[in-house]
Image 1 (cartoon, helix red, strand yellow):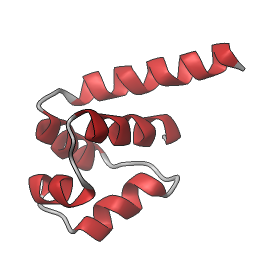
Image 2 (tube, rainbow, N blue to C red; image 1 turned 90 degrees about the horizontal axis):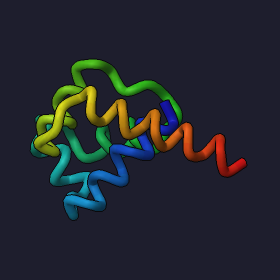
Image 3 (cartoon, rainbow, N blue to C red; image 1 turned 60 degrees about the vertical axis):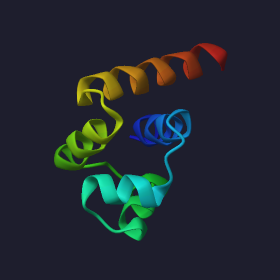
Image 4 (cartoon, one colour; image 1 turned 180 degrees about the vertical axis):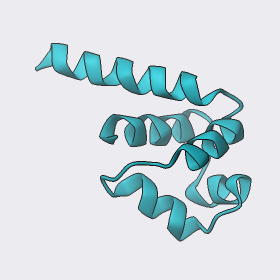
Length: 77
């Protein structure tokens, strides 16, 4: 979950997208999006789909990247 939130924030950076931009794209408030991505709690499947669509990628691609991030983190430790 932490890795997924980190990957979503990383993709926001790659796409130069703010919390407000992502909120508009997912029909949520900026505060709701920011809270979901900075608090260590699970992003719902529905939110994951909306976020991935906003990035122009699939939810499975976001999950794959998060898993890769987690695996790289474990190897580095």
